[in-house]
Length: 78
Image (cartoon, rainbow, N blue to C red):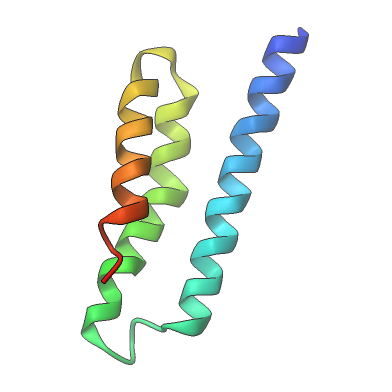
């Protein structure tokens, strides 16, 4: 494995763990079962954990990953 591939995998795994940690913390503070409005950040967090790392995995979809990551960071905020 080259150094570039190793760095890329490390960054993707760190992005996944950061998104998973933020999503878990948000679920702990605002459980979606309590209020319906909490479903929007729940779905945004789910997309951030699953879709964004997949978009960053392929060279052609990196720009879409940046756009979706930026939208998911700002859109669910009240």
